[in-house]
Each structure stands twice: as C-alpha cells, then as structure tokens.
Image (cartoon, rainbow, N blue to C red):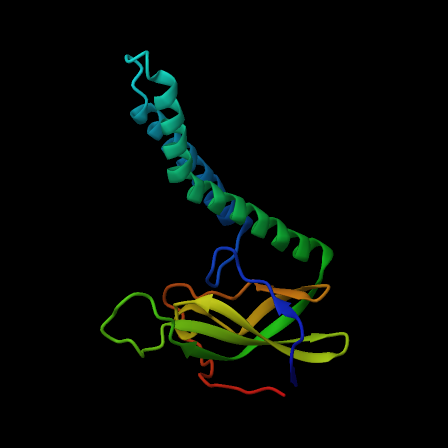
Length: 189
C-alpha cells in the first residue's frame, strides 16, 4: 500500500459531516450578515440632517461599511467556490468505497492554553482502491475523536483527476457503541 499521489480536497464545513444544504446555509448566512452590517454601518455613519457635509459623510459611511462587511462577504464567496469545487468532484469524478485504517491526533496551537502539547486535531488515514491499486490518503476532520463520532470505518471517496474528496462517514447515533479504530502514526513509502 502506498501513500496516494492524489490531493485531498477538504470538507468546506470541516468535520465529519458534509451536506450541500449546510454549505449553502453557511454561504447565505455570511452574505446576509455581511449585507446587514454594511447597511447598518452606512445608516449609522451618515448624518442625513447635515446637508453641507452629506457627501463626505456618505463616502466615510461606505468606506466603513466595506471594511466591516468585506470579511463576511469574502467568507461567503469562499464557501460558494469551495462548494462548487466539491460538486464538480462529486459529479465529474469516480465514486469508490473507502475505509478508515487508522487515525492520528496532532496538536494545533490556538491561542494560549493550559495544555499546549495536548493533541487537539484529528487526521484520518483512509484506504481506497483506484485503477492502479490501493492508495492511502490523509483527511483532516477537525477536533472530535473518531471513536466518539464514527459508527464504522466505512466512507466514500470521490476521485476527479488528481483530486479526491472523502465524505459519507458512518456517524454514530446516541446509544451506539464506540468504534475500535486504531490510534497510530503510520509511515508510507
């Protein structure tokens, strides 16, 4: 088994669960909140009763509106583009079964905490078969431990060109037993 030469496209929603509805909700929410912030900033910065400085105030109001709403609007645009990329991979690509063979926990530093060396991020090693044999790719899934989230090691891998997208993890429901996925650090040649 060899480390895959395919590039793994990340889940736009991050984590184990992917849905187009969730992506669309995130992008619409970002656009909506960005527009509300822009409108509120413009109305708060412009003094409509002072006629002699109206145009100067309007330019300042628009500048503040752009500064405060631009990050949200760019976030919405980013989510739109990432969702389109995933849709292209899923519609134009080949679908194959995948299996989680192991996972590893790494430490990603986020601010100052009490336990700076404690692992807080999960990377799954997923095995799948394609034309030229078995491949293994590493998929970033976020902060939750797979033993607490996954019901089984099965997943779906979409392959389009030199890009793969891993989705359709079998998620646990309340009361399901924990899985027996192996926590290990694997090296591939």
